[in-house]
Length: 474
Image (cartoon, rainbow, N blue to C red; front, side, top):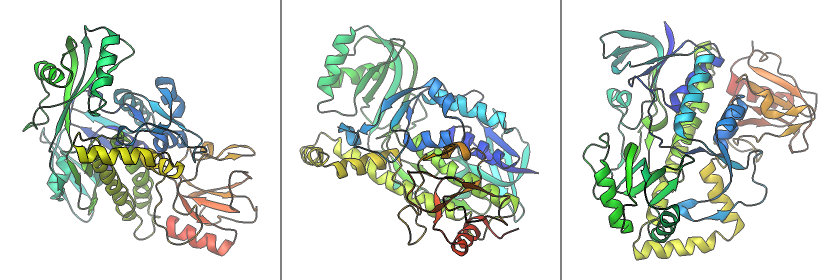
């Protein structure tokens, strides 16, 4: 029997597959499309996702295929400089098209032994106390101990489970695509700058090869968002907003997105779970969607692997929903707020002017930036040290970097006292005795996703933390 079937070979599903393979789980990824998509929805990785890639030894691959850009504020299109001393060793955004992210994660998942089966559409599922049966469009069936739906906002898995997806339906739609333009670059730039003074959802950005990525509001909300717009529709809306269509032609791809905002009522139903856009959809303000899905997988992977291996403490798998659903709810709220602030209505523009002034206060600016790049996320582990529940940055040690020690996806005790022990949990937790001038704590226990599970210097407290997150001692 397969350990886990993953429906969907997007970034969320591919990273989850790789995380499970780190722990030896047998994984099958089912993707209904025969080929990876050519359209580019996401354009980059935020700081927390960059840290995730570093924690698993993938960052060099991504850096070789992307471009570092400085972190700065862009909440609702309000440009601000980065505050001093962001809590990260990676204070940049990585500009990289989603097609490249998909390819790199697919390569990684295959290298570590995940099976990726393209052109295989899941059409039905049933579950019992021992596992899940997936029914495919070609009439075949696959059996697994668990199944995870990473199959997007129109998730088949979510619909088959009957999980409610409450929220707000689309009120506005935006068209986007890549195409050539005959207008001179200087003309494009000046006209776009003028339009964006009032319409922040409009843009033409030149790509390295000279073509343009075009983003323009649609006239109405389409009945079927899966049907791409036509070039004629794009040209018409460009003329509406800019007074010219810039001579655009020869589209490589065209797509559309809406401002629909929805959150799954639950992330788990028995042996079936949801992650990424299957669990939450929201407007693309701030470029948070792909990153949110990657971070879902990073949270879920080690917990599901622990369940499969038999050492998971009671309730560990349920902490996936308890931790990640509130994070998604916060993202939905901040994208709702950004959408309102990007409106051309007088009231919204007045609030925008006020917020722009407030971002001149460093703590306001820091809060908004850390929220978008996801390094401000703190899970509720109860009362305790200020680090408890937060992910730990890549601190420098006397013998290297912390993230270099997390590549295997295990727990880690960073012990500056040299007096502690993980005996009884050594099959799940690494013990590193080292010193860091950047860590203001005697010792910190990290979960495999890098979040701090315990801080202190007493063995009894450590063992309580170990048992809570890593099960009984062996």
